[in-house]
Image (cartoon, rainbow, N blue to C red):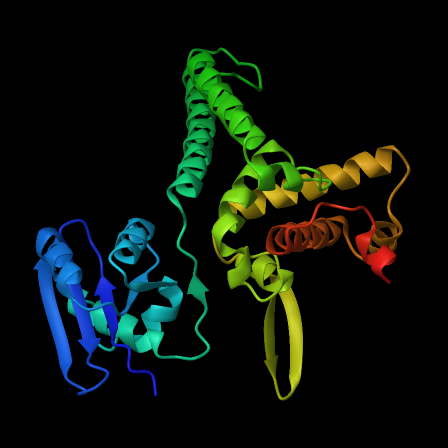
Length: 313
C-alpha cells in the first residue's frame, strides 16, 4: 500500500488552499494560508507527493517544491473540474485536486524548466504583437474609410513589425544552441518557430507520453471520438490543449503539401490520401504525423530520416 501522503494545493497569487489525507492515520487536513506561510509549511513537512492544478505559476511552484524534496505532479484542469462537488471555492478546488489525483487513469503534466518557459514566453509575446499589429491595421483602415480614403488591403505598423522580427531573430539564435530544436527543424514542415516551440514542449515531457499518438492527441490534432452501442465514430479534431503549437503544425503541413504539389513530387502516402480525402483533412493528417515524428525524435534521441518507417519495414 502506498504510504506517501498526497497533498493537494490550489495555488493563487497570495492565498493557498491545501488539502491532504494522512496515508497512515487517515486523518484529513485542510488549511488556507498566505504565500509566506505556505512556503514555511512545505519546507517543514516531510517529503511527500504534492499535486497542483496545471495553471498560472504551477510550473514555478513545481520546481520550487521539487527543490524541497517533494514529488511534484501537475494535473490538467479538465480532470479536476468534475470533482468540484458544490460551490467553487479555494478549499473545494483543493479537495477536488486531491480526489482527481487518486484516479489511476489520470494523465500528468510534466513540469517545465525555466529555459523552456522563457522560450515559450518569447513565442507568446511575438504572437501578441502579431495580433496587435492586425488590430491596429484594421482600426486605421476603418478610420480612414470614414474620411473617404480606401486604404490598401495590407497596412503594416512599423514599430510592432520591427519588434516582432527582433523576437523571431532571438528565437533563431536560441535554436542554434538547442540540440533538440536543430533535430526537429529537419522534419519537413517544421520551421524555426515550430522547432523552437516543440523543443520547449518536449524537452521535459517527451517521456511522459506513452507514444507519439498521445502527444498528437494532447495537441488537439487527433479526431474527437463519439460512440455508443459498440460503434465508435471519428469526427473533427478535438482542438484540445494549447492552440499555438497546433496552429504552427497545421500551417507547416499546408506549406509542405503546397510545395510538393507545385514541384509535382507528392509522397505516395500524401498522394493516396489526397485522392480519397479533402485537402484540409490531408493537412491535419500530415500535421498529426509531424507531431508524432517530433515526439519520436525527442523521446528516443534520434535524428530525422526520410522514409524511416519504410526502411524499418
